[in-house]
Length: 296
Image (tube, rainbow, N blue to C red; front, side):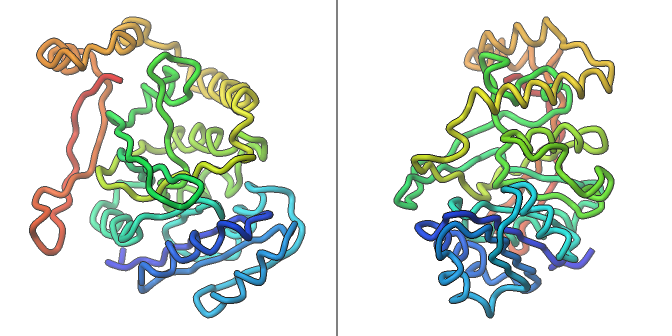
């Protein structure tokens, strides 16, 4: 894979005139040399006037009715030809250099099919960075045990959609579509992807979710209901029963007791893969895969 593989970025938009310009700038101003940026605007307001300002940076854009966020992303991906796929909603914001980080990692490690951050960002309604979170790791077993669907475990985490990249080959393996267009379409997508590949974590912040009043994500009960249904189906498909001992120990927050937590993690913790830059002072970055065990 080229050092600068083509990355197809899709932004689904609806009633987004107040926020979409910052989203667009966060993508195109990175200066990534092999960017294929597609915006699928479902209308609702005059966002198209803002999109037109950046037309020279776009591979394709439309402003027409569609069937919602996930349908719009599917539509965008079908128009693209990148080896790496990524989408960011019209109210979220990428962090500087994140396209380069993703490209370097995918180019160096053939076995990485999808990638997300272990340092998810958060933006306030004004577009100011309000925080950077910390996830202990990613693991298919932890996902199956429910630790990435908050509400099913006391110490649940999110796989942040706006910080997740994946190969177009993996997208095709799952049928090149979201399993559902409901609120939890992203979580249902993770369920399908975990059938084919492990998720790798990156220690660099890549993007962030922007909190704006009135978002679809505020319907959390509905999201969790749909997510639990998708997770239950994945467990049935893989014949998985949650590992109760590990679940209980994870819920005890043993990691705050350093020596005890480290010992338990090494013995029965979840196995994860994270990609780290061994020497941040060097050029080019010294990316390496580190395999380790962790507890939530």
